[in-house]
Length: 60
Image (cartoon, rainbow, N blue to C red; front, top):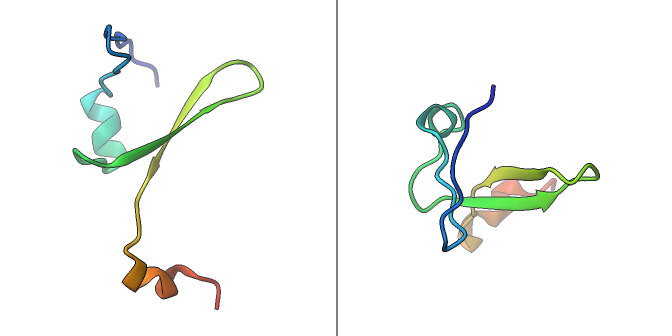
């Protein structure tokens, strides 16, 4: 799966709709950005957990 998108002068990239749907991303969601060993940019969707709910997400 590949899609072409354009970098704006402000450094922004629009994620294609089909990618947003498949990853269940919503406006305001966070994305982790990493550079891999081959020089590729890897985007990973992240959800923030409220501190009051953090106990639910620990291994204990």
